[in-house]
Length: 214
Image (cartoon, rainbow, N blue to C red):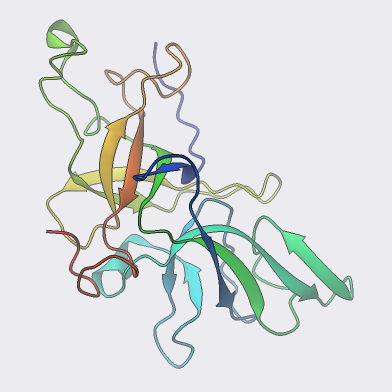
């Protein structure tokens, strides 16, 4: 069946060591940062006087900075509500003082994400089999696209749209999503299939700052 293009960002599913025991770290977002950050968005450090803070990632950001992790919610003192609120996304305003962000940055974490276009598919239909993919994206570096987040669901709109041997790309494809058969994203012979990824160019990996995993 064809896959419906409905990106949802990066959804944690496991770690390379087994079940979902990935850690969540606390980071900070400047209250003046007007860029919305949605649940499931990749983040990067802010470069400049506010270095150490995070913001929503963009493809261009990874040429000078590693991924800071996947945004998974925040808390802040709301100016309008005059109380501390907990949100699944940072709307880009309404905070008094720093925003406390919760970020999945476990270097062994694994995420499911939707892809865009055909470069993430496996071999063509006539030659496809479970034992002989022909071609596969597994093991290749992957770049994200920001997409459009949803302020109603507070969910990310990020997806993957580029494969290549570029070491600064933030993710590496570790598996194809094939189960449950027939559900959206599980047809690896159709565009917009889902894949599992791990961090490649990430601040806690044992690599250079932006060098990627060789």
